Amino acid sequence: MSIEIKDLYHTYQVGTPYETHALQKINLDIAEGEFIGLIGHTGSGKSTLVQHLNGLLKPSQGQITIDGVDISQKGIKLKEIRKKVGLVFQYPEHQLFEETVLKDVSFGPQNLGLSVSEIDKRVRNALEVVNLDYLEIKDQSPFNISGGQKRRVAIAGVLAMEPKYLVLDEPTAGLDPRGRDEILAQIKELHRRLKITIILVSHSMDDVAKMADRLIVMHDGEVELNGTPREVFQKSEILKAIGLGVPTVSALLYSLKAKGFEVRTDLLNMEEAKEEIIKVLRMRRGKNA
Amino acid sequence: MLKDITIGQYIPGESLIHRLDPRTKILVVIIYMTALFIINNAIGYYFILLFSLNIILLSRVPVKYYLKGLKPLLIIIILTVSLHIFMTPGTIIAEIGPLAVTKEGLKQGVFMGTRLILLVTVTSVLTLTTTPMTLTDGIERLLNPFKRIGVPAHELAMMMTIALRFIPTLIEETDKIMKAQMARGADFESGNIVQRAKALIPLLVPLFLGAFRRADELAMAMEARCYRGGENRTRMKQLMYTSLDTGAMFITIIFLMFAIYTRLAA
Ligand SMILES: Nc1ncnc2c1ncn2[C@@H]1O[C@H](COP(=O)(O)OP(=O)(O)O)[C@@H](O)[C@H]1O
Ligand SMILES: [Mg+2]
Image (cartoon, rainbow over all chains, first blue to last red; front, side, top):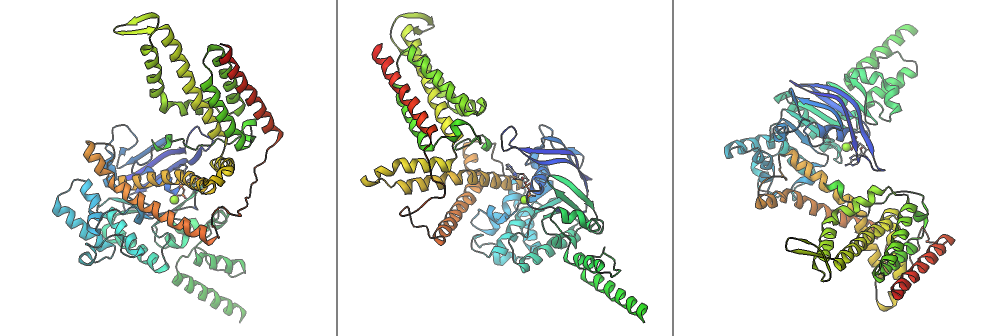
């Protein structure tokens, strides 16, 4: 089962002077269990694209199929789709509204019409996944906890619906480095443990490069690159041209290469890079001796 | 649905009307409205129609924007026209069931309909060709002479500017929160009136909190940049009368005199 996007176009404010072609000829397949990094700088169409995946936006043209169901046809049960595809918006803490954390996280499952015991079970699970202590936090007001906690409560609100596909739109925006690393680690864990398909939207290469199986790079409403992180970072000229650059480790390897060191440039983590640099330095010394 | 809100919508352009000073445009609209209520016979309406069509053409704004502005008022216009047609006593020219159409009523109905449509359309010319900022600037300057009798011209204009500035932001915010709650399975479109009202809580609470947060931030940012009301405040874009404005005022005043004349002559 999978998500298929065929020839998708989206135009905002059609027929006004402010008409924006936010998406153009998008063709993508996302298989179950994948961890996708969706990257592009601000205004490249990432948020517009992900809002199509659960029917919040309708395509101007084209087709989206989720597990074999075309979701743009008339009379489709959107609630079913939204149960399947969970979408965490950017700054999700701005959508908290209930008196207590418990009530807020229950909002989604309640809308799905689940039983009280099932809701309770899901809320406990969701809060545990985002590393919050259920007993300690459940009766607190979602407006009185710290910024990082608010973000995690809001994410738990979507997790509690137990979606099969989870889309997170810039979940780390505005967090400090520690909060960011925590959230990213929890997302990684979610994917590893529950095998949920993850689509992680970001404008930061460093965030997604290490985690994603596949990167989709967007630019001006179109898919510019689509492949494994290694494949994508090979195209460093294209990435630079669209203002994204490569992760810090790749950048280091590229500049070493430019200075005449014969290092591989397709490595992503610090350890591999270290080994590679030591290897090349040893070889040099061997040659000179 | 939220996209249909056109308050303060500005259509960029370089037409003669776009280039007029906002003060001129506001005054012209006021004079125009006065004339519209003075005129009471066919010759007068004929000329005001001609005058209005000219303004609309000169603005070079596609006609569909004017039609869009009229749409929400369609019911009021139809109601007013029908009331006049059926309720005015006089010579009966047709009968539909218990309702009688009189000659005087028909005339009054057509006049009132035209009046309402022209009123809305010419006001739209003003808002469609003037940015909200320029418009409030113009209002502030026009109110300036009344400061002496205690009219807080600057504060009124600043409040209007901020309100106008935040309309699109609030619409955008509403749209975003609605979508986010819909992603959590919220349903804003079905159910009875109680259910629907309850469904609005997840939208309204975050919306108000957001608005207060923004207001707080804005106040802080304005203070940090030393805003302290209108006194001694200079402006980046000075408003300036040109010969274009003199021309427009001249034509409008002639038009007003003509309107008064058609009424007196009749
Ligand atoms: N609600 C909207 N109305 C009009 N234009 C929009 C709206 N949302 C986004 N856009 C425009 O669509 C383009 C893509 O935006 P978006 O999908 O938000 O990009 P990203 O999430 O990559 O920053 C931008 O040019 C943006 O200005
Ligand atoms: Mg975005």
